[in-house]
Amino acid sequence: MSPEFIQGIVVFVLSAFIGFEVISKVPPTLHTPLMSGANAISGITIVGAIIAAAFAEGPLAIILGLLAMVFAMINVAGGFLVTDRMLEMFKKKPGAKK
Amino acid sequence: MIALLYLLAGVLFILGLRGLGSPRTARRGNQIAAVGMLVASVVTVFWVIDQPLSALWWVIIVGAIVGGAIGGVLALKVRMTSMPELVAAFNGFGGGASALVAFAAIVATDTVVGTEVKYATETEVTVALSIAIGVVTLSGSFVAYGKLKGIITGKPVALPGGPYFNLMLVILMTAASVWAIAFNEPMGYWILAAIAVVLGVTGVIPIGGADMPVVISLLNSLSGVAASMAGFVIGNQGLIIAGALVGAAGFILTVQMSEAMNRSIANVLFAGFGTEGAAPIDAGDKPVNSATPEDVAISLAYAQKVIIVPGYGLAVAQAQHAVRELATALEERDVTVEYAIHPVAGRMPGHMNVLLAEAEVPYDVLLDLDQSNPKFPHTDVTLIVGANDVVNPSAREAGSVIYGMPILDVDLASTTVVIKRSLSPGFAGIDNPLFYMPTTMMLFSDAKAALENIHEALIEL
Image (cartoon, rainbow over all chains, first blue to last red; front, top):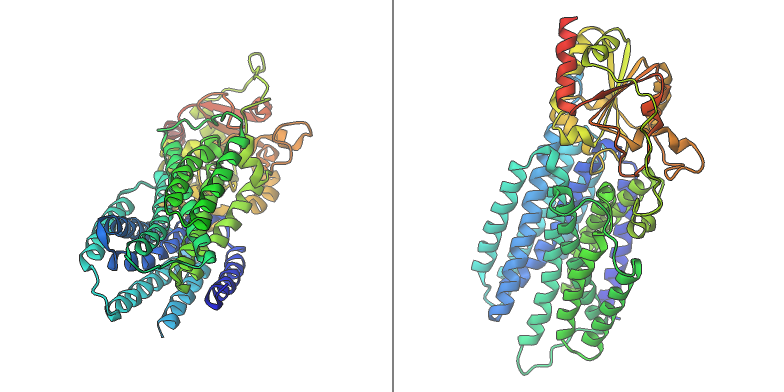
C-alpha cells in the first residue's frame, strides 16, 4: 500500500472517532436537523464531482461528470437550505428570549 | 497548501456538527458547515484553474446551476410533514454522486489511449466500494422515499429466500468486483453497479414503514462512507474526513433509533417486523370509554398539568398548529402544558420536534422519554394524539412482541385521552390495553378535527 493510502486510512479512522464523539450527546429534539445537516456534509463529494467534470474526456465521461455535479449540488444546496429552514423555527419560550 | 485548506473545511464541518448538538447553537452550526463546504468547493475550483490541462468549465457551471436550482426549490417548498421523504431523497443524490465520481475515475483511466494507466489495487478496491455503497444508497433512498410518500407499500414485503436473497446479491457483487480488479475488466464495475441497484431495492423493501427512521439514518451513514471511499479514489483528504464524520454520525443515530425500539440493527434490517406471528386482534367485546370533544374539554380545562403525546397521526393530519392552539388556550386557563416525545414517534428521529417547532411550540417544553416518564404520575391528563405502540403498556409484560421496548408511561396519569381514528393496531400489529383502561377516554376522530372540536368546546365552557 502506498504511503498516501495508509495516511488516508489514518485520517478516515480518526475522523470517524471524532464523528462518534461529537454526535453521541445530541438531544433527540435535534435528530432530524442533525441528520439533514450531516446529509448535507456528505455532499462533500462535490469536490470529486468538480474534478471529474473539469477533466472529462469523451461523451461518457462528460455525462458522468455532469450527473455527478447535478447530484452533488442537489445534496449540498438542498441539504443546507432545508436544515436552515428547520432550525429557524426552533425557538425558546418568548419570555426567555435574549 | 491545498491540503491545509481541505483540513480547514474539515474543522469547520466538525465545529458545525458540534453546533448542531444544541438547540441554541444549531442554526449557527449548520451555517458553519455550509461555509466549510464553500471553502472546499472554492479551493477545488482554484486547484482546477492551476492545472496545466484546460478544464471543461461549462460542465461544472451547468451542473452547479441545475443541481442548485433543483435542490433549492425542493428545500424551500417542502412541507415540514414531508421532511423525512426529502432527507431520504437528498441522501440518495449524495450517494449517487459519490458512485458517479468513482465511475468517472475509471472512465478517465480507460480513455488515456496508449498509456497503461492503472490504479493501485487498493485504490481499485475503494472504487468498487464507492460504487457499491453509493449505488445502494441511491436506490435504497428512493425506495425509502417511495415508502414514506406512500407510493410504495409501507408494509414489509417478503423476499424469496428472505435475507439470503440479499446475501446472494452481496456475494455476486464481490465476484463482480474481483473480476473488475483482478482481471482489469472495467465491465465488472458496471455489473457491480447494476446488482447494487437491485440490492438497494431488495434491502429496503422488506422493511416496514415504521422502521424508516432507522433506515434513513443508516442510508445517511452509508452516503458518508461512500463519499469517504470516493476520497480514497481521487486522493482527496477533504472527502475522507467529511465522509467519515457523516458515516460515524449516521451510525450513532442508527444505533440510537434501534435502541429506542428495543431491537438490534440486524433485527430491523432482516426480521421484517410484523410479517409473522402477530396474533389476530379480538377487540370486539371489550368495553371502551368513548368520549365526546366536550367531555375531553372539561377534563382538560379543570386539570393543572397536561402532557401531550404526539405521534405519526398528528403529522398525517397536519395537526401541529391545531395542537398548539389548544395548548395556548389551556395555558390561558393556567393549565401547565408540556409535550412528551418518544424517540421513534413520527417517521424520522426528531420529526415531531420539527413539526411542533413549525407551530412555534418552544423547544423547552418538549420532553424526551427520560424527562417525561417521572412526570406522568403527577399529571392530571395525558392527551395522546395519533400515537399507539409507543404508549402501549404491554411493553412492560413479558411475552408481548414489544416486551422491553421503552414506552411513555401515559397510563400512570389520572386520566388518559386518546385521539385516534379507530382501535386499529400500530405497526407492531398488536392490541393496546391502554384503550380499555377505566381511566382512558377514547375520542375517535381525525387528529386535526378532534383538536379543533376540543378547542371550540373549551371556549364555550
